[in-house]
Length: 118
Image (cartoon, rainbow, N blue to C red; front, side, top):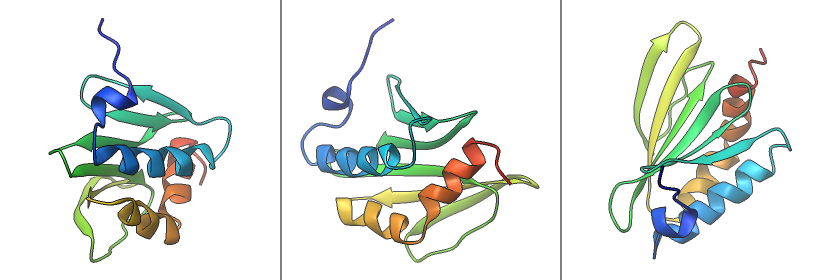
């Protein structure tokens, strides 16, 4: 199995986006686990709840599972998977996009879903 790290997966302009998300995730608690795959980084507790996937050299897709459906001008898509899981997709071009999501408390909401807290 090939191991991938942040520098390989998020080079150049994507580094700042990854760093902003990583800082937000580490601020959610010691139980949050970061895991790299060939195509993305994921964050989980009892179950995975947030993913960051590079799309281009300057854009990434932030995916978050939450209990409830949320809307915002920057939300690309909300997918209702089941009665208690809504997957939100946000295109991220700058660290400020991560901060916009953070300001709404969505990372805490997503982590609560990952911890199965309701």
